[in-house]
Image 1 (cartoon, rainbow, N blue to C red):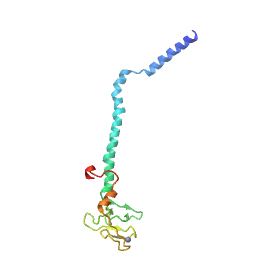
Image 2: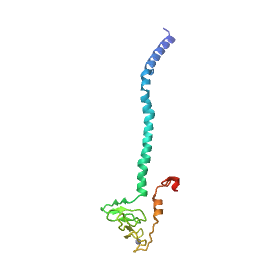
Image 3: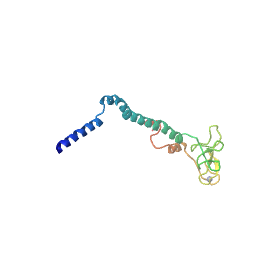
Image 4: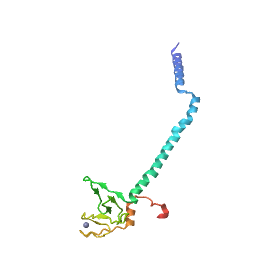
Length: 160
Ligand SMILES: [Zn+2]
């Protein structure tokens, strides 16, 4: 056996080896094709749809509730007392913070507001601070608009 014959023989062996490894049982693979299709195509599609659903139906209403609807519960400070942001009406009894411009709670009781200038609490229906004289008058519609997240108004173009 000379050298080219040896190489040729070796090459044939290598090819046979590769064929054993590479050429699979096509019949069983075709049978598995629907499963590959399911994993490779339908799986990602379902994932994308689930993410879209999560974004539109879980995330959006939550931000809407937080910005467009009140009241919300005040955060509790380290001393155990609720923290009421200055200039926003609140109910000291329930610890709820109402939207700017609100003067009464659902039961018709007067809400309080902390003066943003001097920090003295007063009733929310009094526009002028009795302590420092700051006039705090909020147009409720303007407040609602500025508190809403950026984007098209609810109801789409018809409501604009
Ligand atoms: Zn004041």
